[in-house]
Length: 285
Image 1 (cartoon, helix red, strand yellow):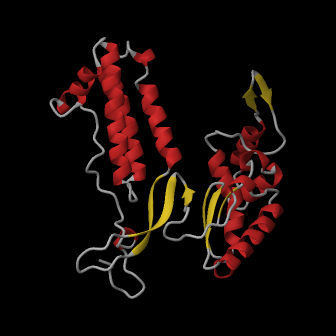
Image 2 (cartoon, rainbow, N blue to C red):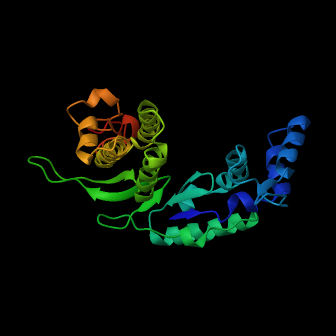
Image 3 (cartoon, rainbow, N blue to C red):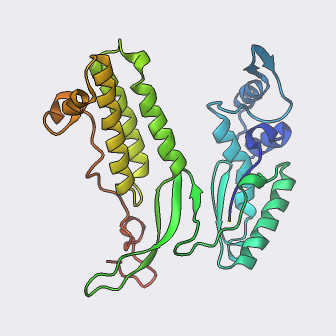
C-alpha cells in the first residue's frame, strides 16, 4: 500500500506540533524561536499570509517539523498486525503479506492520521499487488517492480524487487538539462554550462545509483550529450553534426562532460541490501 498525507505541511495543527516538540525540547529560547518561525507567515502574490495551521511549504525547517509530528504515527504502528511502515516525511509505504492486511493497514492509518488532524491524499492512496508484469509502485522517485531474471545456462531464474528512476524523475532530469542548455544561455561560457550540467548529473547519479538503474543512466547520458551538442551547434551557428562531433567520441575530453555510463549500481538483484547476511546466516551470492 502506498499513500501520501493530504496537505501535510499546511494542515498540521500548531498547538499539537508544539506539544510534540516539547516532548524532547525543554529550552524555552528554542521553543520561543520556533513559535516565531511558525507565526511569521509566508509571502504569496505579494501579500504576507499567516495561516493558523501548518508549517510553511518549502521552508527549511518544515520537513524536520513534519517528521517530528508524524513520529507519533511511527511509535504506535503495529508491525505484526498491519505490516511494515516505511515513511519519509509525508510519503509512506506499508508492506503487507496479503490484501486483507493491506486493507486493515489502510483503515488503521486513516484512524491514526485523523487523531493527528490529518488524512491520506485519496489520489495517491492505493493498494498494489507486487507481481511480475504488474504495475508496481513509485516511492521517493524510484519505480519499484517485481521482475524475473532471464534464464541462463546452469542457473535458475530468480524473482526480485527491482527499482529504477521513475518516469517522472527522468522527465525532471531532462527538463533540468534542457534549462541548462537553453538558447537564452548562449552568452554563458561553455565551460560554465558544462560544469553546471556535471553538478546536476553527479547529484542525480549519486541518488539513483542504488537500484537497477544502469539502463536509465545510459538514456540520460545520451540525452545530456544530445542537448549539449545542440546547444553548441546553435551557439556557433553550425549544423547539428558539429555539436555531435564536439561532444562525441572524437574529442570526449575537450568539454569534460560527466559520464553516467559504467557507474556501479547497488545492490545487485541477487544480493541482500549492502551484502548483509540473510536469515540463515549466509550471504547471498
